[in-house]
Amino acid sequence: MSDNVKAAVLVKPGMVEMREFPMPTPKKGAAVAKILLAGICGTDKHSYRGETRQFGGTSSAKDISLPLIQGHENVMVISDIDEEGSRSLEFHGEILKPGDRITMCPDVVCGKCHYCKHFAWYPWCDDMQFCYGNTRSCDEKEHLYGGFAEYIYIEPGTRIYKVPDGLPNEMAVLTELMCVTYTLDKAKEFYSFSGEGFGFNDTVVIQGVGPLGLAHIIKARMLGAGKIIVTDLSDYKLKLAKEFGADIAINVETTTEAERIDLVRQETRGLGADVVVECVGYPHVVNEGLTMLRKAGVYLEAGNFVDVGATPINMHMICSKNLRIVGMYNHAYTGYRPSMEMMLRDIKRFPWDKFISHKFPLKNTEQAIQASMEKDSMKVVIDPWQ
Ligand SMILES: [Zn+2]
Ligand SMILES: [Zn+2]
Image 1 (cartoon, protein in one colour):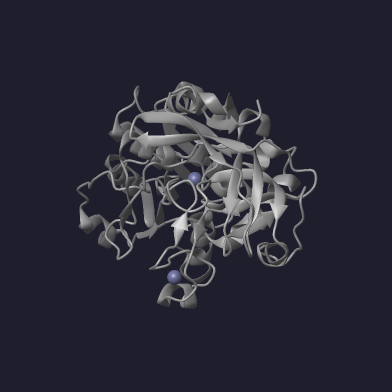
Image 2: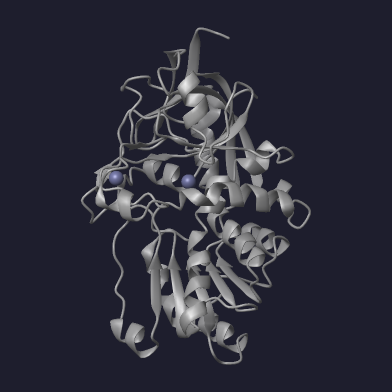
């Protein structure tokens, strides 16, 4: 084990620099893990572009803390762990030891506020301690709080999940992303009491099929979707979406909004889609998605994770069609193990090896972030040991 740990640091928007930090020793309740793979998330791209406002409009609104080691979609192996950490860090109570492969929930909550007490499965915390790869600067404490590094420091209170044997690192690195498809589970719940949204064999439209959209195709299939219709401006992504189970793929650059809405109606016997999921990450697509819905349809807002502005919506349509809009921030802590076990169960059902389009070494992290913003990339990951 070397004395210094290399990390890629976002020093300001649009600028990543390689730095070295001392190898930490885990304090009480903590652990140090070697990063095996770290995914580049939509949030990382937003931060790199300088779109840094998160939790906007709530009491916990904040900007990311620079300089920052980004990376919160991490699959790791424990290299050093304190005795208390080995007993307390794993979410399901498993004992952790060096050599165990793990994933993590990046949000570390206070455990004491109204939301932590009333909604214990969900990080709505009003006093969020920090988010790995996102809101704790590498100037603080043990420095290594992001996945774009050789090692990461895991603080007490972090929710850690053991990776099931047989699940490749290239799939385990998608776990956090799969957890973010949680609103599809919510849409299922609404169906059970009022026929809103997502019943067996229902039509799901997914706006935007980057990694988040692709994860929603997979999850919708796992949950019993019927027809899946996707939109995007990249033919590469649309083709991949079909390989992962989308039935109809529409390029938004060669069709008009009216044509797309019409097509969704034709494909649903004139009714409209049961569920539409926003995975573009910009608000201008929302109105189109709402218009595609049937009466009592459900709109799932997963993409606008950072504040990139507003869009005009005619609220009459929400009334006249009895629509439900479900917002989504982060994901349930309870989603990690089910996501990993379901991915393992469906290892032969989807062409998982195509989900990751690029793998970059740590020193090329900036190039990797740029690649992740290209039209012809899907999930881009950092392999610090490549
Ligand atoms: Zn993410
Ligand atoms: Zn809290």
